[in-house]
Image (cartoon, rainbow, N blue to C red; front, top):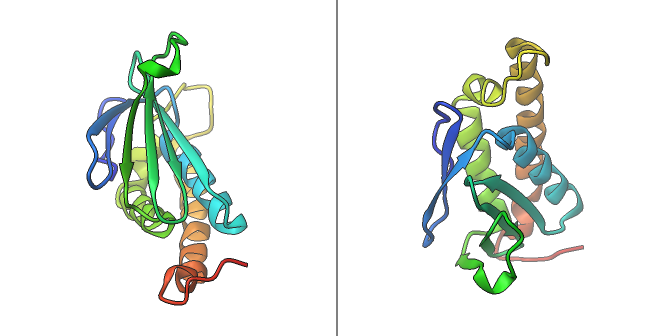
Length: 152
């Protein structure tokens, strides 16, 4: 879903959709993991975003599908937006996010580095804590996405 970050860029792609090169203008790992945690805690759809420079990509993660919208960063009317859909469930999205970010957490901690912020070691530790919470929620919510689909 997310490629290993390199030189301030990562590639995002869901099953059945195009690939999108996302820049360092968003701290992808931290922002996306935070959104995924909130989505699994509340069992509500959530949205992640990234800049394509010059356009913006929004991905709404719902229970059973994801909707990707690429819109003009210059605030052009929405009829110019590109839309794609992927049959990727919230749980599958969160598992992929967990796997891709945890596989190279230190690289993700360095993805956005403005030199005046916390050290890479501190950011990596904070990201690993967030990933552990996401992992716990994935395990907790797996039954909700099984054959006995029940949302309370």
